[in-house]
Image 1 (cartoon, one colour):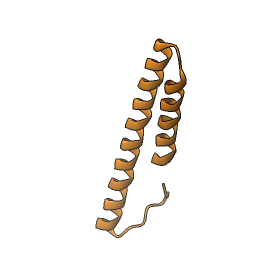
Image 2 (image 1 turned 45 degrees about the vertical axis):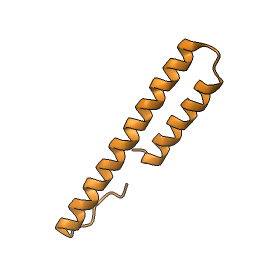
Image 3 (image 1 turned 135 degrees about the vertical axis):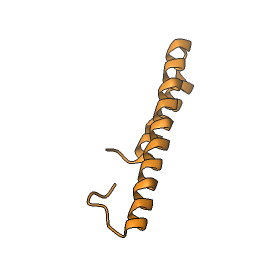
Image 4 (image 1 turned 135 degrees about the horizontal axis):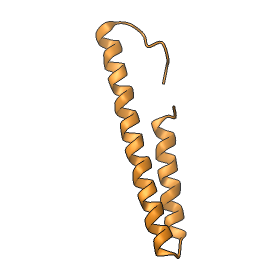
Length: 66
């Protein structure tokens, strides 16, 4: 699974491509893709935060580090 920062980077790249696109349909699709990457980044960050809270509450380190 990727890190949230990687998802954000993909979103940034999509927005950069959209800004350079002269085709409105391509631009719209790239912006939608960027929004999806941003949502994935938020979800991933929230997931990691939940795992961190669970670890703090239980005192058990996570087996797999994200």
